Structures are given as C-alpha cells and as structure tokens.
Length: 81
Image (cartoon, rainbow, N blue to C red; front, side, top):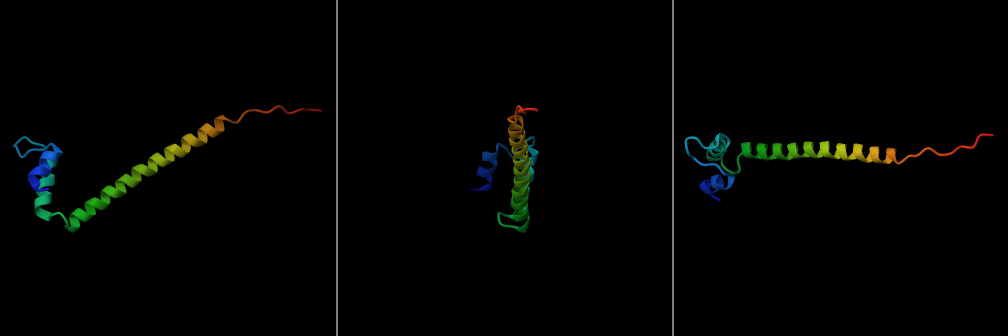
C-alpha cells in the first residue's frame, strides 16, 4: 500500500488542517521506512500495551468469578444438642 492510500484509509488528508496525528505518522513513515528499528519498537510497544489491557480484563473477570461463587454460598442449618 502506498503512502497516499495509507492516509486515505486512516481518514487523514494532507490538507493544511488535516489530522495532525496522521501527518506525524506520514512523516515518520517517510523518514524511517516500513522496516526501521523505530517501527519495530513501535510495533512491540503496541503489543505490550494490548497485553497490559488484557491483564486488566483478566483480573476483572477473575474478580467477577470470585464474587459470583462467593454469593452462591448459603448458610446451612446446624443442629444444636
């Protein structure tokens, strides 16, 4: 995919009042290329960010599961002599 198609797919234009993030990404893409060390670091940081979000979600699921099993516990009748 060339740079122009890449921008169009992201919803950014090269107009003076276009998307500033898209413009930054276009400059980085043009400067460092597709397989630069910078791009590898950015790709890895995206992976780590998603793993961090996954760990938050996993923790929340675990807490909800503990809460649901705790609420199922009922008092039982104990006979006293």
